[in-house]
Image (cartoon, rainbow, N blue to C red):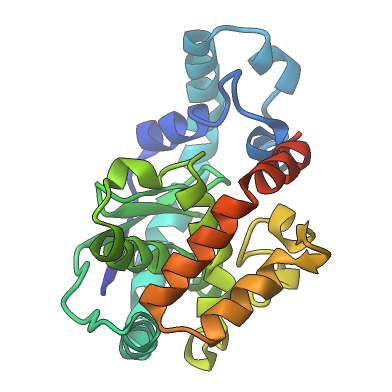
Length: 259
């Protein structure tokens, strides 16, 4: 696996931000924008239609972009150089975790250094976003999370033979993929270079998974036990069966937390 960091430009960042500022997005996804960019008037943005929001965001973000573009361009070099230092270590750890030789897989992953504080990934496009405010260590930590997703669904698809269309939010398969990251990341070769590990540091899994109890037990602990006691393919099957059994509780917890 290999990641190349790039600057996708202002228009890309505005479109990415806008995708999390639609009326159907909960505060969990939309609020971080106003924390990082106090220049944006929340009330003004939310009272206009989607095209009005695009125009408003473009106006505000273009001024910010001109100020930070040199920083983003500098970080392209720093992020790429930092990743290269650990590329072999990462590939070795992921190959072992997924019982799959990941060398040569996903050699064309693109990490877009973006102004959006929410950083989605796009499986079909083999790309993901990294918030520009990250340090080199932070960018690598965020990238490790996304790299795990790409390999997870690559192996998952071999096990289940399903469609990649089923791997996106809000499917249960997406939910599971977000929870399993912490167990896979616990490998010392990965967690030692991830400043967001463990989850108390805020970046390995979404916070609403950290206090999710099923059968009076933290679901992350249950999933970790399954991970430690099964090969990766059996783990995928058993963890998904467990989530299917408790899907209603899982979704209710997430819905309450996102509001």
